[in-house]
Length: 410
Image (cartoon, rainbow, N blue to C red; front, side):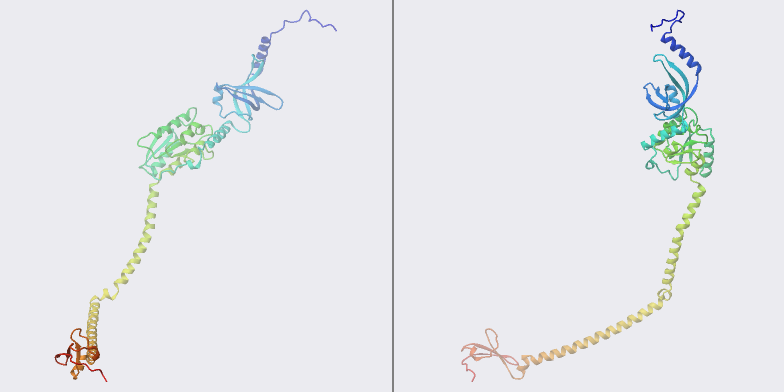
């Protein structure tokens, strides 16, 4: 068939730009603000801070964009694979002939945005070790100077001061003002923690907190700036955010958590009355063994004092005098007996010596002849020669002679 020609009354064709403009006007007027749910994919974080992504379901997809100012206000970090609900405006991007959703708000499906942001930041800071148990420091037992970063007009500081002053009026408390709710609160809290490090005289411990409130009210204690300021403090820190159910990231980073500011005061400030009771108990506990030891020693002393030496000292001296006299008599008697026995042994030995003495033999008429030269007693005449000089010893005196002749024995 021959090609049919357009009818003479055909309208003027539209340019691409005109058609796109009409579509844009129609689409944007028909869908001024919409809520769209889907899964985030192809997420791109531009250097400018804008977020570009695709929102899809199992049958279609839609391009989305989050401008930097909106992205900064999102309570959680947008990530691939998240199921979200986005609220925003549909607009046509004429340069590409596509439409996209300009996101004004976003919420995760199944969990609130604040809770998701909490979990995301918690995982990141846990990986850095900011919540590690080994980083925790011990609190001082008797702090003298204490700081509290909080709102100076809030109920938290009033409750804290009331309990602290009641427990120990001498303690010094420095209030470091900070905004504890709303936009910008985290930066003032972090600045207060930093200022506390520079105070002079220095603080012994620092409390960071406020009274109770909703999750949104307490959210500044979950922000990264506050958590890092607490983790980087050289002072021990007690987190006293008045919310007993939920635990903030500040609680995890602090060295100790108190459920309320009042509990923080009871934790940090020792009670003078309780200390007095403890000292009295310690005194009694230490005194008991000392008293027992004193009783034992007193009993020993009484036993020693009851001995006769201390009861009748003169009697003991008299007894010792008698013993000494008796020992003296016995010793004298023993000396005399020993001397008499020695004399008897001496007489016997003398008699024996006299019996064997050659002088006794001489006294009976015998004599001893010796060669004059060597003094050897003579027993054999053959040992002499004619002319040898002899000495003959008698009982009384001696005779000198010379050998004229020797005769052998028969």
